[in-house]
Length: 236
Image (cartoon, rainbow, N blue to C red; front, side, top):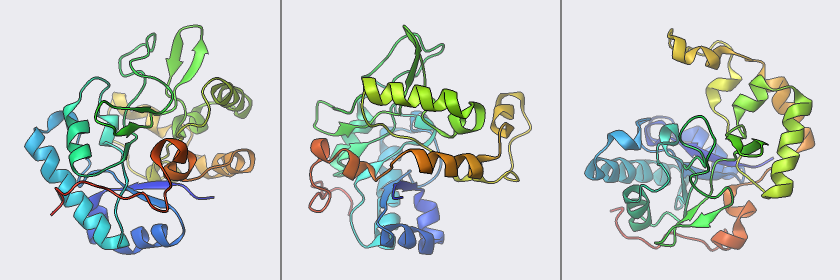
């Protein structure tokens, strides 16, 4: 199984070996920013500086261009265009940060569930949002669905998404594989402690679903990953 791994630039700088192993194993290596800080709390200048620093560190580790970005906390919101403009200036071909629902309770889609191009040509690969009722959606294409949902329910909803939309992004975080990883002792974070038996469920998922890097799954939209390269010049 190969996938897209979005590394923090700080991690790539301090621990380049696992980043190199990911690239050598045929995975796509993307950027998760330099530090895990929400885009919505940065100015444009701060976001540009964070991205340039992240790309330098990650590309130094893997020896080739970074093609994709995933914002910490999915903090690029639908309709907010300035981060997309900066990513385009830096030559990033695709972003996978937008939640098709970014306001509770999930009754309205704020962007398409399928990949779509922004006005400047940068492609958005939205987080997979599953339709539960006629007009109710939840972003359960993630570790949350593995931790919370019975296998049959998760499989049924995933098949419905594939039938209605097609391929989609399934996201996981490293901490979800470690039952001992720390969680802040506050009420809003208690759900992160639920279902920390992810390795077993993840193996089940791999047996029933095929995965590949974003640049390969969505090559029709993005272009051939063998020749795809950033065209921007603002990284220096």
